[in-house]
Image 1 (cartoon, one colour):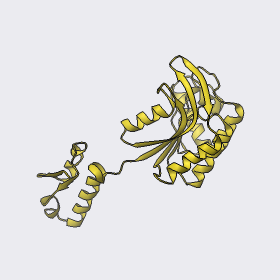
Image 2 (spheres, rainbow, N blue to C red; image 1 turned 180 degrees about the horizontal axis):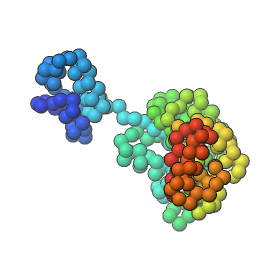
Image 3 (cartoon, helix red, strand yellow; image 1 turned 30 degrees about the horizontal axis):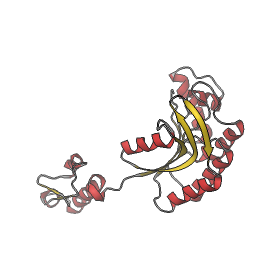
Image 4 (spheres, one colour; image 1 turned 45 degrees about the vertical axis):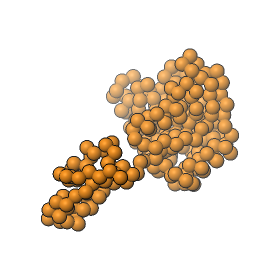
Length: 231
């Protein structure tokens, strides 16, 4: 183990993040304080947050399709999670054969196998948050919703992938209705793009003010935070 010593105080621990230090050794930072117990508690909490093996990395489960080109889907989600310092896990809803020029094939998983993937994650490394991407089959949507309720999942982010920025519909009306009925009520955050927001609130969205208005209406309907995206 590597221990940092000398001039260490609680407000000097964060800069040690990423240096390889596993802990700190202090004397005056605790015993030189008016409230020794409070000083020790603050130092311990700060060290556990930023240093080595004591710091528990947050965990996130992405439930989405696989993009063989790595530009979207679970591959993009896992890259984003890694870049933000969280431990990413995945449950795959469909395999796709695609690249930057288009999609040449889609192979959806069965509802039973999707359920097995989610069970495997929650029964071992419980996620602190769940992010749901494109799910085009209503039976898969129902499985996801049932499992999230079963495990009382928290911090659920739903990307309501229904309409492309070009305006093209990406899922059937039946699946879209199931998405709104089953998953939206579980969401902590919804992240529609402008075309999806227009569908959800049945209004035209052409500027920033209308994006805010649409997000407010969606939030009132589904009782969650809303991030309305331009793209």
